[in-house]
Amino acid sequence: MSAPLTIIGSGMAGLGLLRKLRALDPARPVTLITGDSGDDYSKPLLTTGFAKRLPPRRLAARSALEVADDLGAVVRTHTRVEAIDPVGRTLTLGTETLPWSELVLATGAAPVRPFRVPDAVADRVFSINDLDDYRAFHAALETLGRPARVVIIGIGLVGCEFANDLAAGGHAVELVAPESTPLPRLVPEPLGRALGETFREAGMVLHTGRQLLDLRADGASVGLELDDGTSLSADLVLVATGLRPRTTLADSAGIAVSEAGIHTDRYLATSAPGIHALGDAACVEGVNAMYVQPLLASAKALARTLTGTPTAVTYGPWPVLVKTPLLPVVALPPVHPPARWRLEGEGSDLTALAEAADGRLIGFALTGHCVRRKVELARAAPPLLG
Ligand code: FAD
Image (cartoon, rainbow, N blue to C red; front, side):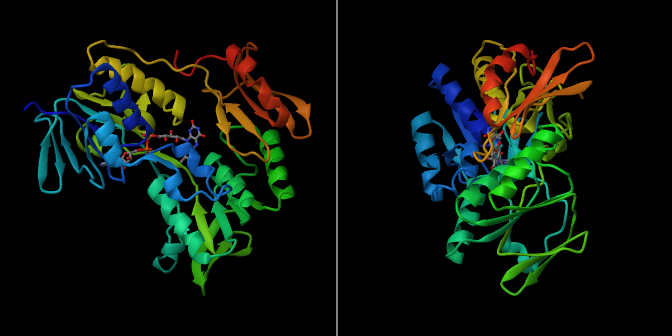
C-alpha cells in the first residue's frame, strides 16, 4: 500500500485541511497524528464557556473516533511526532517509524511562560490553549465548588477574553501585566484604556504597568508578589502571556523557520520538498496572522494544491473580533507602524484609524457602538496578504 498523506495536528488548521481535502478527494489515504485528544472543537469557544458554565464535552463537536469515521482518515491521538526525516520521508513516533507520501505541519502555537512556576503551585497555575487545558481548568473550578479568585497574567486578546468570560461566570478576576492598557498589540492606548475602565466598572481589578516577581504556595491559595510590593492571593492563576509558533520539529528536520513560524511560500510549501505548513505554526511569505480566517483560507488553497491544482493563498483585510461582550472590540492592526492614529468618538465608543504618511488607511481599531463600522472600514483597508 502507498504511504499516506500525513497531517500533524488536529486543531482548526489540520482538521480544516482534512475536511477540504475530503470534499475534493474522498479516496486518498490520509493519516492525522495529534498530541492531544483529537476532538473536533472550535478554539475561539474556549473563551466563551465559563460565562455559560459549559462543561468541556459541550465544546467538542465530534470525538476523534467520529472524525476518523466521517472523514475517512486514520486518526492517532495523544501521539507526539518526535522527528521528521525529509529525505527518507518518514516520521519517528517513539520506537515506531511511519512513512509518508506528502506531509503537512499544522502544529499550532504553544503558550509562552516568561517565569518559572514552582512545583508547589503547579496544579493551580494554568494556560488554556486547547480543549484538554480547558478540561483541566474547568475541573479545578468544579473542585473549588464556589466562585474562584482568579489572577490572570497578561492583558492581550486571550487574557482579556478569559477575564470577561470568567467575570461573567461570577468569578473574582484580577489582571496583571507590564503594559499600561489592555490589548497593547491590537489597539492604541485610548481604546485599551476604555476596555480597562469597563473591566474596572464590572468589578475586576487591573494591575497594569506591573511585573510578577514571585509565585508561591500560601496554604490552599497561590500568593503572588508584584514589583511594586503588592501581594495578591488567588485560588487559581491563568497565564496568558502569548503564544509562540511550534517550530522545533521542523527546525530539527532542517526546514527553514524563524520566531514567526515555519516559512512557506504562497502555496504553503516549506523549504523541504513534499512538506507543507499552515495555521498558527506557519509564516506565509512573512505573515503569521494566528487567527481563524487566514487558516481556513490556507486549508482551502492547500487542499486544491494537494489534489493537483496548485493554488496560491491570499488573505483579505480581515479584522479580529475580540470577545469582550462588556465592551466589544474589533481590530485590524496595521502590518507596519502607522505614521499616526486618528481618533474619533467619545466615551467608550471609539474609532482609531491607522494612517500611512500619505493618508492611506492601513488598519483600524473600534470599540463599543463603533464596531458596526468594521465592514465599511475593512473594505477600505489593504489585504493582509494580497
Ligand atoms: P492548534 O489549535 O494549536 O493545533 C495544533 C495541533 O498540533 C494540536 O492538535 C497539537 O496537539 C498538534 N501538535 C503540535 N505538535 C505536535 C507533535 N509534535 N506531534 C503531534 N501533534 C502535535 N481566532 C479567531 O479568529 N477568533 C477568535 O475569536 C479566537 N479566539 C481565540 C481564543 C483563544 C483562547 C485562543 C488560544 C485562540 C483564539 N483564536 C481566535 C486563534 C485561533 O483559535 C487559532 O489561530 C487557531 O485555533 C489555531 O489553529 P491551529 O490548528 O493552527 O493550531
